[in-house]
Image (cartoon, rainbow, N blue to C red; front, side, top):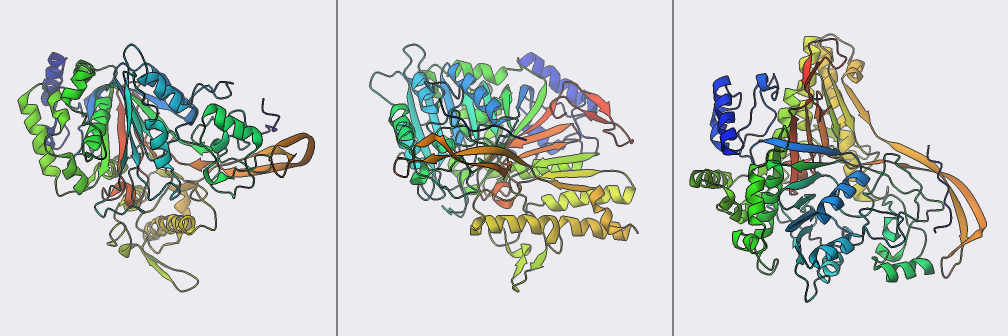
Length: 623
């Protein structure tokens, strides 16, 4: 329970040996995929190296992948917003050449670190200005943001953010910052329903951060998940809860803070009343990558940036420009780096028209040492044209099929095929007529989960799926969008004619078992917290608080919002990224997404994971 009471605010040779080893032992990958591995990154995917699933032989996407699995990576888990924002800040201030940032939403004044410091030195714009104004080793910052319909729809305020950040450029600064507002990314070019949704940071091509956390309000979070907003750590728009109506205006002191610290004015000119309303805690995860996988995130950014028109971007990110800012040697070194022992594949969702815009010979091919590698990579790009890049979906399905003991999922949205449902007012919902193009919900995640559970039921073996989702989607309860997303999740899990629960029950019946035993195979969870607040009287004109007049004490409660896009299988492999479990994230023709498939080579242990059955290889990172 929260009991915070509000108070007055006051090398090539080694790579060649890897190839020989793999060919000697027998690769367990599809032989047709072998040509996709360059000499520096061939994946050791076999059981003897303990990097493979015993069922499907490997966990990765092999169908027109954006990037092949890369060995030798160091991977660090960032389990909360506080940890992730701090790590991103620490990496950015150590930059020597460039910082790339991509977000669905950004706040120029979000505090990445040192919350509560009287000078607020951790604001994002302050950090960016320090980087670009350096006298020695000035940094170039490039940012891709979702271009919304307008700032207030859906409320990302991307226009305001781009303007305020680009105003940081000043004569005499050695570095620069540019923002590319990227238009919708589906082949339907639908500006309302689809968006750029990748969330990552890259520093000098040597370290990258990928996951579900945008550099914006509400994402800074601690493991305590406080529901009571602390004004000392949560300035203005950080009073964040999109699930409640905002009740108060801006106090005179807050207006002074906005002017003094160059903060954004309250979105909508109103704030939640922290004296009687809860903030919404935010459950999210991110991952820090060092090694070749970080370079793949760099490549993703440069391709997304360079597809912009001349009016979108001031200059392409190519070899000439990177040499000019001194970054090219660092990138060449990063291509050979092997700081750890994890296999990581960077996977994406990108539509066919946008893949075509990225071209057959993007600037990043110059980083390959040999012409043969460049030609092979270019051919792979050409082969992808005409198809949507749905790598994330393929990796998710493959990991589900690989599972031996359990699957754990955290996702903001869980929408998959559910059959039909007829509501009380006679309206019929049919998943075969829904989806991005009205041709059905096609991501196949629910199918794969049920099929895997069915195998264990028929074999009489224990197996479990744990699914953690929000209480309801972010938004007011009377919002049509909130209702729609919530209903589709409920239909997928329980109420649809072919929901997960109903299909598990069908399998149980066919095996002469009680259909109510479905709960032995599926658990659905969400999270909530509560705390105590004190409300003080406010001046009706200035909204200043009178701390001598207490007018109420309240127990407040709110859901801990599940925003993570996380899958863990058998303590052996993890997928962490920006993609939710729905068609707009997984089909490739909806939102752009990016994720990482992580198979650690360290800390390998044999465990039956409590099942009493055959042991499996578990790995440190996933465990």
